[in-house]
Amino acid sequence: MAETYQVTMEKMVYGGDCMGHLPDGRAVFVPFVLPGEKVTVEIVEEKSRFAKGRAVRIATASPDRITPRCIHFEVCGGCQYQELDYAKQLEVKQAILLDQLQRLGGIENPPLQPIVPSPSPWNYRNYVQFHLGQQGELGYIAADGEHLLPISECHLPVDGINTLWPQIELGEESGVFRLGIRQDSYDEIMLILEGEDPKPPEYSEDIPVSAVYTPPDSRLTVLAGEDHLVFKLLDRNFQVSARSFFQVNAPIAEKMVRHLLDQLDFSGGPAAVELYAGVGLFSAFLAPRVRQLIAVESAGSSCHDFAVNLDEFDNVALYEAEAEEVLPALEEPVDLLVMDPPRAGLAPAVHDALGKLLPRQIAYISCDPATLARDLKKILAKGYELVSITPFDQFPQTSHIESISLLRRTGQ
Image (cartoon, rainbow, N blue to C red; front, side, top):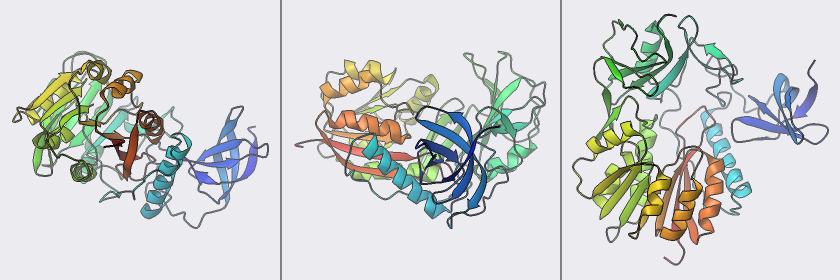
C-alpha cells in the first residue's frame, strides 16, 4: 500500500500541480487540487527532496473550486484548470509567471503587465491531435502520461472540429496512429493522418474536408481536397500546409501581433531578424515597417508557406536553417531581433551570437516560463533592460503560459 498523508495545499506551481509539504518537510506536488484545500494525498513517486502525489480525498474544498465542464477532467492530460473559473485561472498564471521570473531568472521586480485573456475560454483551438487506440478509437494521452484515454467529449476545439471528430471512423486496420484536425478562418477543415507505412491507407470518408497522409520522413500524400488551409489574421491571409505549425488560438495570435506592432520602435527603418519564423505570421507585419528582414526557420514545410505568404516583399530574406547556424554568421548590424523559440528555449550558440550582435531591441515570444526566465537572466547580463513582459492566455483551461518580453540595450 502506498503511503498517504493529510496535506494542506499551499500554492499552484508551473505545470498545473499544487504544492504542499509532507511531515518530513519535503514538498509534495499534487494535480487537480487548489491552495488552502486539506487533502488526503497518496504518494506515487518518491524523490530525496520532493514527492509527487495524487488526491485520494479532499476533506476541505477551496471556495474557488467549481464543477468542471468536461466528464474527462482529472483523467485526461489535456486540461489542468477546469476546477477554477476563468478569472481565477488568469490570476494563477500571472502569479506563476511572476514566481518563475523571480526564482529562476533572479529578476527582482519584473515589469510584468496584466495577462491578456482569451476572447473565448472554451472552443478556441483551431487544431487538435488525437491518438488512435487499437480499435481505431480517438483519444488523448491520459493524465498519467502513459495511457490512451478514449474520449467522448472535448470543450477546447472550435465548433467545426467538435462537430466533425465524433463522426470519424478509421478502424483498427487503417495503420493510422495519430490524427490531426485543423480548421481555418474560412471554416475549411483538414484531416492530417499519420502512420508508419510509407503507403497511404485507403480513404473513403464521405465528408467534404481535405485529407492528407504523412508518414515519417516521407512525402505527404493528398487523399482529398487541398494540401493547405488559409488563416486570416488582421485582414491578411496566411497559407498553412499540413506539416506547418500555426498558432492554435487565432484571436490571441492577433492580439500578440498587435502588441508587437504597438510596443516596438520602428523609427529609422530598422534592420530586423526573426528567428523561428514559422509560416511568417510575425514577419508579414514586421516586413512593411523595417528596412530589411532576415527570417530563419528550420522546417521545410513552414519555409514553403513563408515564401508564399511573404512573396510581395523584396526586403525579406529567408534562411531554411537552425537559428544557431545563422545567427553567429550574421555580420551586418541588427537593430531588432524577434524570436519565438520552442519550449526548450535558446541554444547556447544563440546566446553567444546575441552577445556579439547586441541588437538594439529584442522581442522574445515564449511558451515556457521556466526557459524564458533562464534565457532572460543570460540576456540581461549582456547589457539589456526589460521593458515589459506581457502574458497572453493562448491556452485557457490548461497550465500553459505564453508571453512576450520586450528588451532594449541599456543606454539606448
